[in-house]
Structures are given as structure tokens and as C-alpha cells.
Image (cartoon, rainbow, N blue to C red; front, side):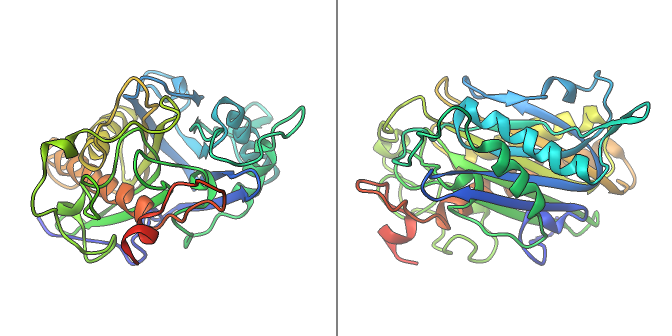
Length: 337
């Protein structure tokens, strides 16, 4: 099977997907919105022990709502769940949403990460700013977007290095199908091997998208155990995998489950009781899976996992340190661009 990255090497290489960021530098937090040109079939797989989410129950295959209009990923812990209301407001102004009689309700599942102790000013008063950040993110969506310390990844951290927003794509040439992934990396674990620059996801790198260093020459047993992250419990990696294949909700659920393995290939440790790891999957339905359907779904899930692992590494590789005393170092500051 031949794989190549898409033109942009971003989740937006999947036709019909756009991404927008909004952030507040003083707050050291922000929001990332993923908006679909048309409602997309979607589901979710949650493996972390401490998730924070909104509207994920309706993504179960047996639920009534068939598709979603957007996804919202936010910093701010539970306060950040307000961001989805801002994304909904932006879509409502565009006349988007699930039709209930004459009314339309934009369907915007959301997930949050904890960044309340990263040095930013969280004294926002009575109401947190995430609803307005969500609105701004949804209004700024585009095909080409920034990676690293932006949007929901502005305040993200890992065990050893600054976290951030990463994205990658892959074209399954034999199927003519594109898979894309976006990750906001705020993990308890580490994306790199020990104290060195090599990424756990290095075997899956396409080109030099996160430095081109290749795998670590050797892996000591001490590298299996990342140092304790400051404020243990303040962790979560949020992710979306998207494809232009036509999938049912049950198949999207299976895709999210398979893709979640990509987090475990890129982060050590992963899916702990102190992480809120959550992976959404969405299908825009523009391409049919030809031939044997089960035989086609298997490589689709495998490629989604590989692509997500690459997105995680890119999120750490592209991040920049926050401008606060004692802020966590970025990969590029520690190891060079």
C-alpha cells in the first residue's frame, strides 16, 4: 500500500474540512474550531480517564442526529465548554444546523483540555472568555492554518516539552481516499524518547515533517517512564481524524477507535487515569470505498492511526514556549529548528 501526504499535509486536505483558531496571549489559552462544508457523519472514542466533553452522547451509532456541523476543541478545562456556544452562534448566523420544524440547531460536539496553571492570567471575572473565542475561531476557518502554539494548543504542555496543535494527512493511493488528523497535545506523557530529540512517532514520519531525525538509535528502559508532569492530572490530548470516504456512524465509531491507537504510538504513557484523551472521527462522504467494504475499512483505520501519530509529533515539533518565567521549553528551543 502506497501512502503520500496531501498537498498541505493538514486535515484540510480532506475536502470539505476547514480549521480556525482564536487565542488570547495574556490568557495563554484558546479555541480551535473544525467546520465542515456540509454536515459530516461522526462518532467518538474516549479512552482517557478524565475527559471533559459536550454533545458526545449523540455521536453514538444508535442516536438520532445523523451528522455534525462542526467540532470545538478548547483550553480552559470545564470553563472551555462554553466555547461550543460561540461556534454554534457563528453557524446559526449562517443558517446551519439540524432542522427541527422551522428551527435549526447547529450540532457542535466539543472537548476541553486543562491549561489553567500554565502562567496565563485566568482572572476573567464572572464569565470566562471562551464563548467569544469559539465564535472568533469559527469565523476564521480556512484550509491553510497554523500549527503549534495556537488556538486550543496555545497553553498546552506535555511531560517534557511544550505541546500544541498538530495536523497531518495521508492519501491511500490504491483507494483514492484521503485521511487527515488534527491533535491538540496536552499529555501526561512525552512525545519524545527520554531527554533526546527523537519522536516516538518517528517510524511513521513522511518526509521531514517533524525534523526528519528518524527513530532513536537506542531506547533505554528509563525512557519508558516520562518524568512526572507539573500539576499531574492537568492532561488531555484532543484529536479528530477525518476522511472523504462515505461511512456510517457505526463505521465512524470504528474509525475513531482504530485511530486512538495513534496516540499510544506517539505518547508514552498514554490513556492514563490522569488523561482525558478523546478522538473524534468524521466522514465527509465524497468517496465510495470500492470492492470489499470490510477489506477497505481495515486499512482506513490503520492509516488513520499512523496519521494521528504524525499529527501529535508535529504539534510538539511546531510549538513555541509561552512568554512566562519558568515556561516549559519547546522542542525547537531545546534541540534547534
